Image (cartoon, rainbow over all chains, first blue to last red; front, side, top):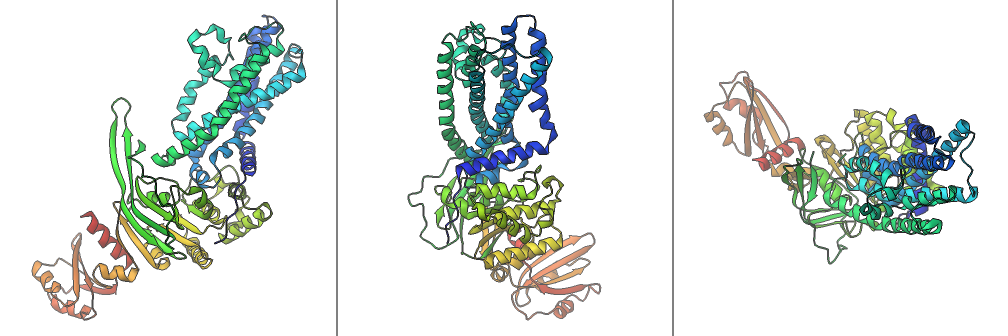
Length: 267
Length: 344
């Protein structure tokens, strides 16, 4: 018996990313969450806070951008796995030699790219409506950090995707959790306004730190989580590393669980 | 729909690799599910889908698994294909434990579950195959050639660049098959492979299955089509209510259910005296009567060739309307006899 070829992690990840792009291009309905929703969020934020001063406007626009990107980057990754259940592709994909984590990573990477596209659209809309957002003191740093914040969202997306493999009820849980996430990560208003006991939960999410760091970088005199920009950056990196590190373990455990319960074909 | 939970897990195997040369070898495979329904008042239903399956399948052959709906065929197939863990027992495929050696087994196993689901509908057939070729690590230099090859083998080249959502059920079934053989597995599990196919496509699929065996692939086939099993499978097993009720060649299974000759007689009712007389004929192993409105059908299973239809006619002189015909006992007869026997 000849030995079969072995899978490659990078190739499997790329294959998944490529399939995600093809599926996106094949279905125009995706234009709504990825292109139109960010515009709506940005315009609503702009109209609500245009009289509240330039930096308050920046605060709001960043939060609005983050909320729209939640849908694209984080929600999208889990939802695609839910689709795998619905269309019955979860079983053949799990039966292949490639660990499912790499299929998820490919999808998450695509969702990061489309999330960045959403961010760019928000920028263009504000540019068209108001002649541009308030100036950012360090545009290059802001751009790099923005990409990193997308990765922090993606790291949460990977873990959320595991829930979709775990149970067909994950969509319900994620829908319920969506608004809690907006509030808990400080997209809508500063988390210092929340009850103190909820702060540890907020700080467990990498985007909370990432978004706060972005605001430090773009709003002079900003007082956020009180660890300062570098403290936020360290927190964002640390929590992202933790999420990505446990992702492999979580997926291994989840895969074992679904083989035990035999619920892969349920949707 | 309930949530299914396992009832215990198998103890870790001390000797994961089987020393036998069988393609498939199972010892006491059991699989139970607990289905839960309701939110406030949870109702738990315990189901034993498989009840201690012992089976050995030779390498390089087509083995058929027959059974009614809900008998446990798909559950058993999924366990062998590493998609489900058994509750108890051990299963080896190609000599390797399906629970502990999935990394070794998965590149060597092909699984075709079939049906309308299981494909990426928004992209075309070729892209579906490309995705799975990448997951299986088929060398990039070979990938396109291999995809063209399997598409041609299932006669789907003409539709390769059409979206799967435009495919008919039969075309989807062919694409499932193409995906199953894309990575050239050593063993292929086919769950109802010709379901939904037109007669011509079904015949081509059976031809493809035979050609795969000629290439050295072991085929494990579940089917509802008796003629298909009879045509393809030198050996088969019948699964009923989670148990293997018989496993042998078709010829020996005919013997098991009372002989390879069957005589059927249709008339307007047979009384006990007539039936008793027939029962005492030489070689008669079994007599069954069924009612179809006013018509009664008498089915006799015979082990020898001594009794001919003329003798039946002579024993039933009060039935001038009697129509008698003789045929070889079919696999369907065997199947129905065994499954009904198990049910009763």
